[in-house]
Length: 144
Image (cartoon, rainbow, N blue to C red; front, side, top):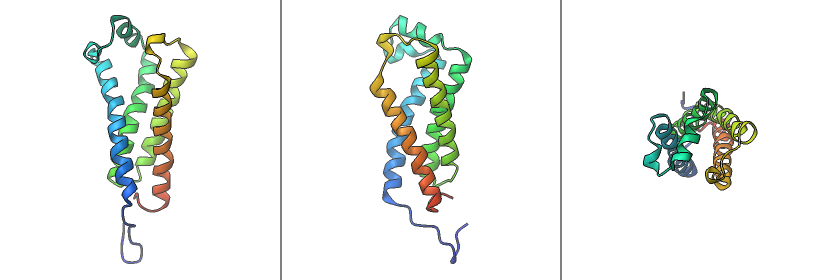
């Protein structure tokens, strides 16, 4: 809690930029996840073979995916709320991303028309950015 002896630092402008941009980015992952688990992939323009592939994910892979997308969304929201819980949320998101990536690149063969290396790299970059940025903001006293 802030007081005269321990004032809360002013929110830096870059926190708002990082929080809003990553919230929008992470919302796309949540949309994809929700459309998958609710059986609405055709609404995203996926082909029947792509839908069959996505529906073949076992519960464990879906659980890692859920940790990744919901943890990342929570991390962005908590960052905007200036909560130190943004960092643990991003740890959870990172665990989910590691599990999902391991499943997609080690356990199964993703069909060629489903591969998106550029998007995969972007997800890793955004996740690690949020992980380290939230940790930095906690250490700086911006997130409490």
